[in-house]
Length: 186
Image (cartoon, rainbow, N blue to C red):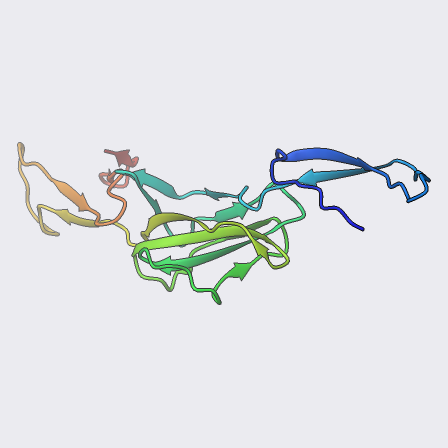
């Protein structure tokens, strides 16, 4: 004889179960206590190191940005997959860790543009729900134009205009210096 103890309604955390058996002539076994923890395969997080920028709700990273996927449970492992645009993950393309955390960078062989990182926790052949974050890869520096040519002659009242544009994360600052002096940030 066996009995299944329901665990679906237990909260995440530590629990105990006590149990004993009685035979057909009323011989009672010793009460035993078992401690166990209920964990969630869906308890997983993703974090970005620097450089990272968020603009208009879009997360921008470069191939230098460390990305960490982790779960708080040391008994679980994690997986991730990078796909172009918002394509679905492929069953055979998951990259698995040997622990509950993995840090990686997006390969610099990928072109600038939109990508989705899928990530999930797993234990053996049980997998948590795949979570995802959409982002834009930006490895291209801003382009710069200036309103005068090299060797130009200017006079009092003339203005030198430096213009920077960036199709990715945007321009944060323009730096310039005159005659090898201190860099000025604008």
